[in-house]
Amino acid sequence: MVQADIPTSSQPSIEELKTQIKRLNSKGGQLKMELHDLAEGLPTDFEKIMEVASRTYELYCELDKLKKQLKAREQ
Image (cartoon, rainbow, N blue to C red; front, top):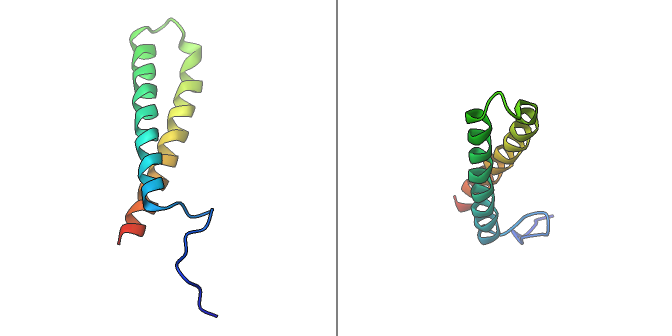
């Protein structure tokens, strides 16, 4: 059986991927600044570093995944 290349709810469109990437890039910039501010203020608030770093890592993993999906879809 041949399947058509019809986008499903599990496959966002190229425009949706671009929108998600743009949104995550913005959030990533905010998290980078938060990490930067924490680093500059050390040793104050050192206990927040792991939580912010974890959120930053997860966001950039998701961003990387979306960028790879977009690249594959555009080819």
